[in-house]
Image 1 (cartoon, rainbow, N blue to C red):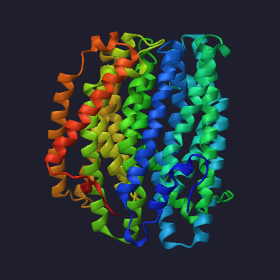
Image 2: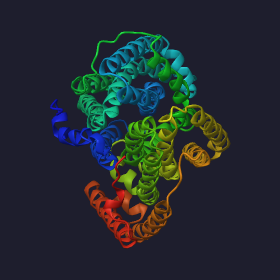
Image 3: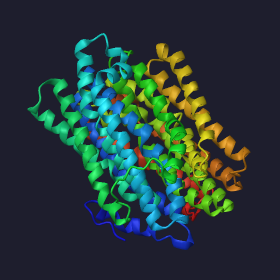
Length: 539
């Protein structure tokens, strides 16, 4: 079945390959490659978006206000939808696919989508009406500045409906992922990035007055991007036969299962988002620019998160759910082990590269227009702190599906609570003397706690038995990363040179650094005996 709608025509063949796994099992590596490939396009467009935003608004007070206000609908979106919703929805949907009739499957989707619409409508109306309260809770540092608080309230009111639009998009994406169709959902964020770039260029052309006017234009761009993403997914869902009329039914057996999993999943699957939100709230009381520095660092950090962590978690969940339903514990273990090995092989060098190239990355992408060298330095410091938590977050994204695929939501919930407590404690202990860097570091430490607890429980419960290949892969990855780091440390110009260099010279330097790092790392990995075929896996 081909997906020939809009950009979907570009990626339809990959989706066809993923969908034709049949009785031979799913090619998880190919599915991950499709998702990662589309995510690369999404992240590149995201970097272009952030380049435009940094040029237009920099790290000004209005920029802080927009970024913090944008966090509010994003927080609720990630809390109730996206990967969190998928954790509860996909295992039950997989069960209906494997054991039920197509009519029963459609009835389940109709009931759940109807209930979901009602919840989203109520939350959206409440959020728009109570925008001032949300602004007060999420941005307490602005309460003493009436003008800034009024702007925060207005931006929150404009952008909050984005939560409903993108949550419905996440529902559609989870439906497609459960059918082993990963390209369209992974490509979808490009549309939001395009919408924000258009809004930034329109505002910068003189259509608005002042930086506050630009912030308003960006807020409307967010709302338009949310609508575009939802519309883009619907034709693909229709081709799966699951674009059905919503019919609310709170007594449906499948809906009851989803909601039983969803309540713990809201916290367990969104521990990182809760931790990041705590950091955002504390950032509002720090010096001006702190929220923007965290935002720019977080955006760079999320590039490998999307390409590696989210890609692995997304393809593992439906495959592990299917294997658990089939009672195939051996392939379940092998698939989980493949996820851990792949995550380490890709995540370890990415984390070290983010640390070593923190300032070059920030300077190349953001140091222009309204952005100052001091802002770039502060963003780079936050990026280094975030880099500490990259590998743990990848392991969290791999481990969590190991629980939810078995419809065990209580265990990851307990660990998410522990991680959040650690985040709050470290944030409160460090933000007053390390500033925004302490907040980024707290997020990373929380990830370390969460990953350790999750993997430890999987091993202790005999749901996961690490293979011998894992030890060899880890050792080779560490050796390759050491060689890559040495090449970057001695081969990359110092920070002063990056500050003084022109934009295109920075781009050239960064491109050479990335290529050199990849060559060195790949060379050591190949010498260590790991070949591309070792990343292949059928579940």
